[in-house]
Image 1 (cartoon, rainbow, N blue to C red):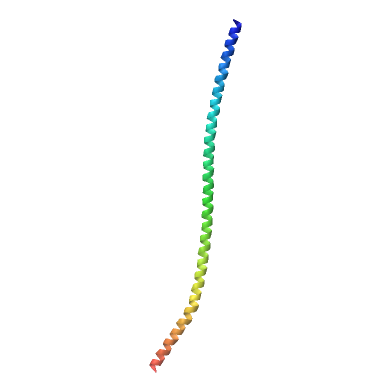
Image 2 (cartoon, rainbow, N blue to C red; image 1 turned 90 degrees about the vertical axis):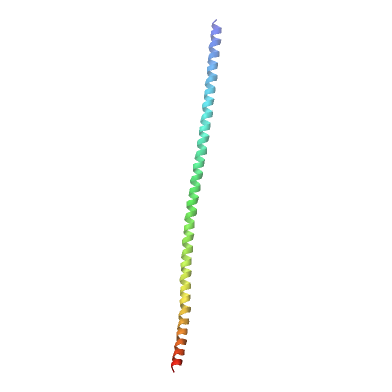
Length: 108
């Protein structure tokens, strides 16, 4: 009888070991799924952070280029205005002188 009791006890222990192993395997699978979800979420967050940094950098570079273009345009406009003034003043003077000559000629 004692052997039969021991065999029954061993079988009960074996069933408990199998049940514990199943529970542990299920817990490991659940943890693996949770870890995988977290890794995906972390990866997504990291990618969003990188994209936001890239957007910020591009916006900064675009602002610098805009400032350079505006500055170059203002410089070019100033140069064009200076050249126009240099060319217009003598022309206006010549036209005025011609007008005076014609006016004086007409008076005489």
